[in-house]
Amino acid sequence: MEFTTGGRLEVRITPSDVGRRVSVRSLTAAGEPRGRFTDTLGILTSWTGGVLRITRRDGEQVEIEEASMVAGKVVPRTPARRRGLPAADVVELVTVAARGWPPVESEQLGGWTLRAAGGFTSRANSVLVLDDPGLPLQAALERVTAWYGERGLPARVQIAAEKDAILAGRLRERGWTAERHALIQVGALAPLADREPDERVLLHRAPDEQWVSLYNRADDGGLSDAARKVLAGGPSVWFATVLDEDGSPVAIGRCVVDGRWAGFAAIEVAPRRRRQGLAQAVTGELARAALAEGASAAYLQVERDNAAARALYERLGFADHHAYFYLRAPQD
Image (cartoon, rainbow, N blue to C red):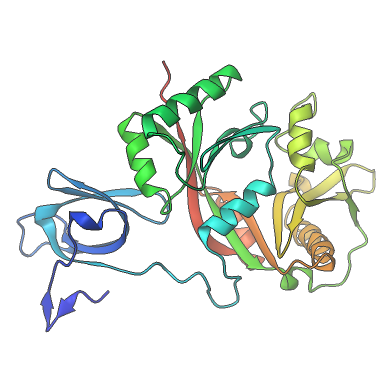
C-alpha cells in the first residue's frame, strides 16, 4: 500500500473520515520507533479517546492507538468485478439472498425488515438491514426486541461486515454480541454445469421425505411447517437428490433461481459416500436447471470456520464476496 508523498509517510485521515474505507499503517507498540509495521484495511468505525476502531472485510474489529499511527489514507472500495466472477455489490447480493431464503412472516421498519420463521435458521429470524430504520436507533431496537419477544425469539440483526460497520459498533456498545460468522461466495454458473448430465440426480420442486432425511437441519421429527415454507420459498426453487442402490439418499442440494442469480444451499453428502464427486453432480444438475431459466451467476452462504465446505466450494469455482454475521440482543 502506498502511503507516501514525496517519499514521506503521511497520516491523511481524520475523525471526520469515520464511516469510510481506510488503510492505516501502525507500529505494533506505540513509542517504539523500531517496532514492526502493521497494515490494516477496512471501515473506520470510530475514532474516540485516541483509539481508532477499524472493521475488516471478515468482520474482525481492530483497535489502533492514535499515537501508534505512522500513515493512513482513505481508499476506494474494492471493485465488485474480479476476473471470472460475477459483478455485484453487497446490497444486491444481500437482497437476492434474502428473497431466496424467505421468512414465514415479516414487518417493515423503515429500511429494516424484521423476519421470523419459528426459529428455523438465523437468516430467516433476524433483521435485514438495507437502509435507515426511520426511527432513532434506540427506539428502533426497542421495537425489534419487542417484536421478536412476542414470538418467543431472541432479537438478532444480520450485519454485512463492512457495509454495516457503523451500526455494528453502535450495537456492540449497547451489549449486543456477535455470533454465526459466515461468508457469501460467488461464482460463474455455466462452469458448474459443464459436465455430462448425471441421471442419478433427481430434481423436484419440494423437499420430499428422502431429501429431508439427509438434511442436517432436520431433527428426528423431520421439518417443522415453518422450515418447509422457508425451504420451498423463493422465486423458483429446485431440490436435488441422489439415491443409493437401496433407495436411501446419499446426496442432496437446493437451488433458488432469481433473475440472473442462482443461490445454492444444503449441499450435503452422506459420510460414507463423500469424496466421490456427488456434490459436484448435484450442483451440476441444479446449475443446468438454473441456466435453463436464464440465470448466469451463482452464490452461496457458508460458515467462516467450515474449512471442508469452503475447500469444496473453492474447487467448484466460488470465491469470497463479503463476510456477514449476527448481533444478538443482550438477555435480561
